View 1 (spheres, helix red, strand yellow):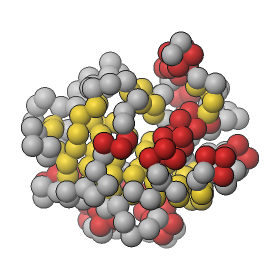
View 2: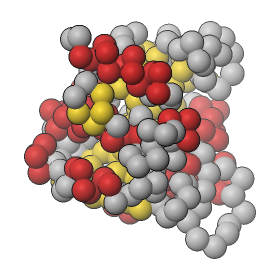
View 3: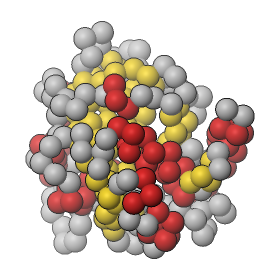
View 4: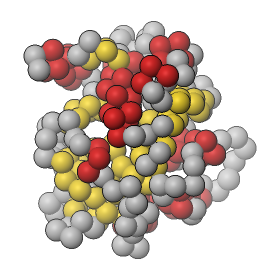
Length: 233
């Protein structure tokens, strides 16, 4: 995988007041911005080109990260406007900046010790998702993972989508139908989940289970807990 996309456009409302002046992916954890952990992993993986979706306090990202040269990366910023476009709309908005090959996409507000090199460079279908054990704040999980690696929207037991996956751009080919979008002026705003569920129904979505550490930094308390854990490593 030569290209990667980092979702960093969220408003971070549950993190206020920390996010009043700093976007959530730029909040410090373990002595550096949360997003820097991703950039280091991507550079080690051999990724050369990273697109970062932005919206809330968008100018802070280039101020803090620059062009990515310090990691040996080339960073481009995909501005979504003052209102984030959700995960599906954000991916669609960034698609023109990504190459024709499958790309790695990562939520900017998660941290994990997962080995990203274990993810397939060429997913068997349209998407390959990293699944994690259900955290306390999301006990019901998201999708069922078969022993053969296929994902299903229904059934038990379920795991939680860890916000990391490898995607083919063809996943977005039917975004209007899958997302129920009728077409409006300006960038489209929709979630990625309907597209993933459509791919699952067609047998074109796979996944793998990471049983190690994973944190969704959704509250100041979880950020503080992650910071303590990283400081003690």
